[in-house]
Image (cartoon, rainbow, N blue to C red; front, top):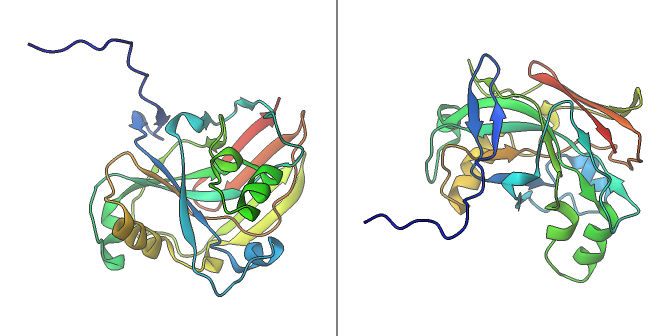
Length: 227
């Protein structure tokens, strides 16, 4: 006899795939401190390695949507990132095999309550309230990977038409292959996982009414507004 759920199960969170279909999201991993200049602007130690944190799957915001300005912050910031979508799971993945586990690529923004994050960090407390809040993970459609993982390509973000962030994937401290390999030593990866790979320098505040546009060369352009 099959047991019935006592409440309705939550809907499956998904991201459109370019060319058709939906990518079901299992987990969202984010890489912190993966561009040297961003570490410097945040006052961090560039000698420390990047690290990982997570966002809930229902933080996803589809391309072209409006993101509500969150409560409990006076410093709501943008972080443009390349996103890797895992299509084949695994543990202890070798860097040279990492591309075999990536289904596709997308453009994402890690939205951050910076003042909340900083206050929690300074007290040695978890960052969830600063990073893992509702509607904090805008993303484009996922574009299937047809070759090796990208090692270079322009990355930028504009607010109301003015460039705020500008960098290149070649500036990553850990390459995309190394990110997949390292993360798979900490967590077993499964199909449906998303990895936000880190942001270049230039992060800054967003205000209600702002129009945001983000770009990763060879992938896509992400746009959304702040409500």
